[in-house]
Image (cartoon, rainbow, N blue to C red; front, side):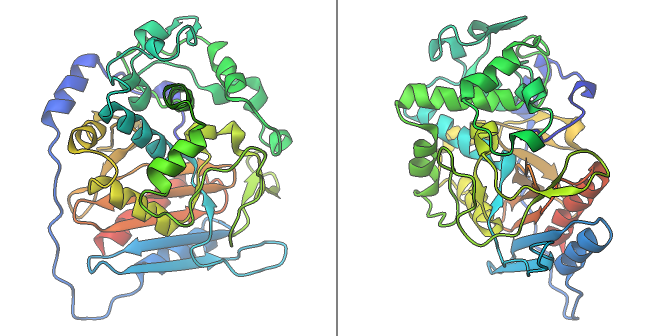
Length: 384
């Protein structure tokens, strides 16, 4: 889903900086700090409680893998505003744009298999598909799709997607979504700037289907979910609207200050290969941990994925690779992940070089200050 706004205020990043970023990025390992002998307050629970009490989130959930390798989970708030039911521990959530990391992994696996070229034009795989005002698939590479440097406009800016309330159960074909993007003007010439656009990953999903001859969801399931044993993660089937396992309810406000509606059930075709994956906080931690330790990609493709460009629009020091981003931690080093927003959920988290991991989810779409506090909570959980 659309993660990063406002898009059109982003600082322009020139192509020459991409080469410099690729050549100069140093992956910083985190040095463990000595544990204090004195008891410390539960930082994670404090942060979740604050997201509920101070920021008005219906519920907040978290899973953390610590320095000792142990996985712990937390909850705050209520799982159902109508009944007051408790929040299920490690309940299923709509992972939103974390889906992009899953999609990028599949594309990079196809690169490793020699079936896709990162610097090959999209036209070679999807001939004639990308045509519009300033848009030409002959000039856009696969790498530019995965790194959001293609200039493709945002399909979620199309009129049919500006209000989620009436389309909660509506099915969209990927081509219908793409047409909404192609009706707009290109954001910039390919390779001359960076701008987050879900359209890039919509096209990546179509590329996966064309190259493999199989549905996108089947490829993600076989190549990622089943491969590393994510037992609570799946790509919803066509027409599937309910979550399969225990979950907190999700809520969406049609406008700031408007009453929240229950958006737990929805047709995720509007997000598809850009944001449809359902998961849990512990499964997301396991996914990013498996990714960074080389269980999903050969070393060459993982290195490409972690070759990043600076994107200050997302925060100080944030850099974006191929479906994954890095963010500096207050205690030193980097956290790698993506984050995601589904209609009714927002997630932040990631993993460190030494294997620590955190995933935090709230059950509505918060404003920018609350989202920053979620990011701060991730930092506090990893640096405690």
